[in-house]
Image 1 (tube, rainbow, N blue to C red):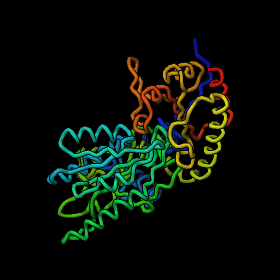
Image 2: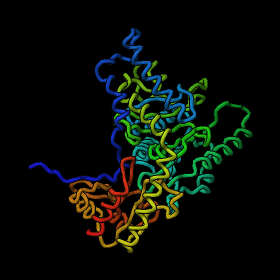
Image 3: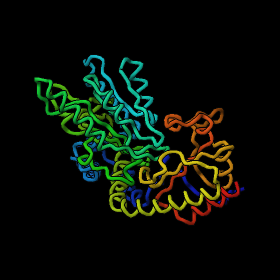
Image 4: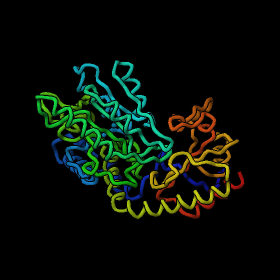
Length: 403
């Protein structure tokens, strides 16, 4: 029997559908324009030109140079390249240290833990109840062993927007203080600053010159592009410094691929779709931001009436959180039960815990911002996207009223 139930998606922080315009741009590169971009003949140059165009679009959207965009298979790979690539370049450095926030995505935290097992010093920055990093702790933790600081721009679970420009200023001041002590002047100083901007790009200014980052991660599948494409912005100076570079490849292959920082034939169709998705976001960001903020405010106001005992996780000041994100604690319920009931009613949301068929683990983000395991296990995340309408939100609110 065919299930004809209408289904509604409220999990856009997890993944987005491919925009039809991005899909159309990709289509030719699956079949007719199939050349290897590393080949010198016409077919190869045709593919190479498509990769360059996408690279240039993304670079301009970030205020960067095209040579500073390194394509990867995902944001997870880009985050690994940022952390492992920097550590690899500093392999002769005595007791290197990395600072990360305690609410980073698992691709950062698990990479940091792996590096920690290999002897790298890792500091996990605490956050307050809104999920904002402790800037005083950051200042106190910086020392001459610190080679990298990684703080995500927007948290994927509670939507907290971090003050990246302020963090950059703190690091810049520390660099200058160290430089004054040193007799050797360098065009590039460390620690470097990396930010995972995967959740931010749809809604916030990501111009790298405005907040002074050295490394920045993007994902195509979070901005209505295809899965299988990510990118790392890597400031040119950190790659060109001699006698060493500040970042090295972790996947080796063709020495000219991705400017020597990522071996492997480029995924041309996905990269083309990525470029188109970025182009579409830059055209619509301001308008979409405003539209989703209104939906967010509307949903929050209605939820307070439907479930007066429910509590918001993360910033209550909506200006401090992404406009598409709301995360609620529902006392007396479990996230798993609520998720199942909503799914059976046709609504897709995300739990405040990582659940499999056999076990559920409380969200490390909700625990880090000071909530109990019980609260983490009783929380749901609702995230809106480009296709979300007020009518769909009303449907969700109706389902929540019944549940």
